[in-house]
Amino acid sequence: MALRARLDFVRSWQPGRSPALIVIPLALIVTVCVVDVLSPPHIHLGPLLVAAPAITVAFASAAMTALMGALAVAAQVLIGVLRGVLPTANIQAQVVALIVVSAICVTLCLVRDRRERQMHRVRSVAEAAQSVLLQPLPAHAGSLRIAGLYIPAEEEADMGGDLYAAARTVHQSTRLLIGDVRGNGLAAINNSALLLGAFRAAAHRQATLPRLAIHLDAALRWDTSQWQSQTEQDTNEDFATATLLDIPDHEPFVHLISCGHPPALLLRGHHVTPLTPETNHLPIGLGGVFGIADYDVQTFAFEVGDLLLLYTDGVIEARNSEGLFYPFAERAPQWTKDDPDVFLRLLQDDLLAHVHGCLNDDAAVVAIRRLAV
Image (cartoon, rainbow, N blue to C red; front, side, top):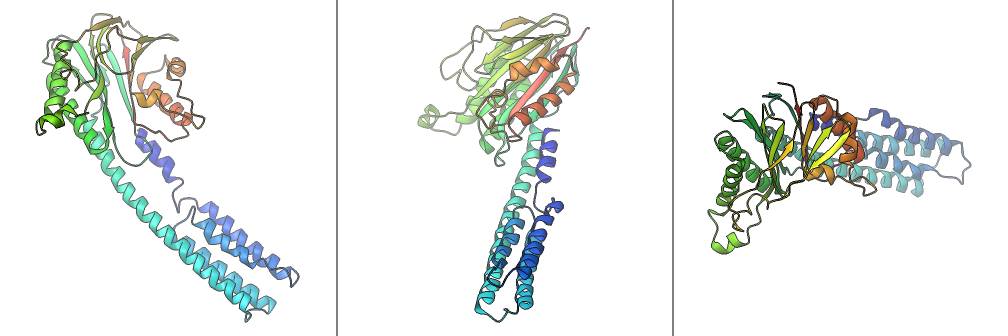
């Protein structure tokens, strides 16, 4: 949903998709041609025709840029004929200059279009990989209504390491994971896939949240260090901030473990409460390195009608053109009463409006509503 909306916005400004703008260089050519012919002999506006292909290259295809260049050259020749100065060196030099500038503009347009096609293919692969990694969250799980949102960064095509997943347990509870792997690109994809796979394989079997956290930490450390020397292991910096949650179906509580991740937000009416644990553990992948053998579980009230928001730092660290962070905690209460899917759609629109459609980092949000059993 997020990526499709983003691509529709981008496509609307791609070369060849703004036909109305062709009027600008056409109007320029006609205006220069008419004014130059009607002006006194000592006034020459022909050199302004070079602006036509130069303007066209900003929004049109290479073929359209070549057409505008050809029309500009034809207009310059027409001016020379009507004013009787075509054989002069001045007019001939202007015609040659127009041809050269038009050729340069077309070349630049071809190079730009080729790079954009390459980027489009890479983005398509990234989108497919992301859809495989981030499987859709269940709309309903026990007494919960759940929705997830992933917004890719606008810069380049590197995928970030934002991730989320959910699993049911045999104890009539729902377990959730939200995390952010360090870095981006293939390394982040690999570590994200590893953590998601480890969570999905073990979340429904682990008896306690601490055991699940230990399992994820060991899985990431083992995978990233099994082929490394001891020196490389000592300098390894692969890790992921994460929050693990367990939400019982029949108890008005949420149990969580925070591993260096931003605190979840609990919305009750228009009141926002950050679920800040007393102990914020080291990120996943670093716990075993520093000898952490256990994890503290924090318990918070989570009652019927409450909305719980999990998110990555790409949301709260999104800056606008003035350098101001997105005020997530202040904006979220506006949509508290909405369905989680509607909430995330409104949040996405507001966040992209804040950054003018250009995020510097991937962002993920999970909204969880407690329903009456």
